[in-house]
Length: 145
Image 1 (tube, rainbow, N blue to C red):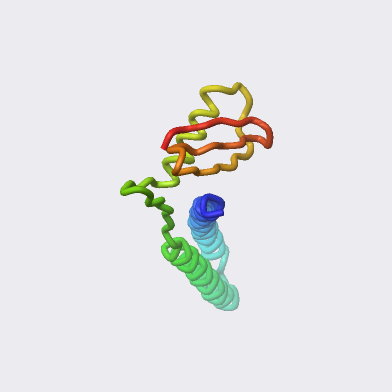
Image 2 (cartoon, rainbow, N blue to C red):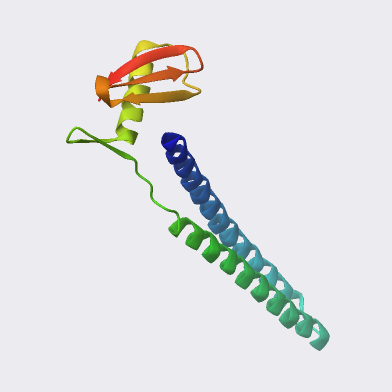
């Protein structure tokens, strides 16, 4: 259960980072597009009414930029607020990080199987000094703690 939660935290961090990156890229594209539109409008504006319309458009664009910046800041803060999780098993005077055990199980699976790893369930038995895993629903293995 704890390993599933750790995996979820890692996936959430990856998703949040991807969202943050996408928001920043979108903000950059929007800024470039805005500058191009404003330059084109300024070149074509000859009459006072057209110039007034360009000024109004600039204000709208500025509000849109501010909105995008606000979303980017919120995405960045959401990523920064991500809780860091670590599960450590203490047994018989030893400390074992569960993420290390999970990584060892994945490496053992990869070394002994030619199929792709889709799912893995880890069973830690400190009294045996081992962790047993079931991968892809039917492939079993063992790693030492």
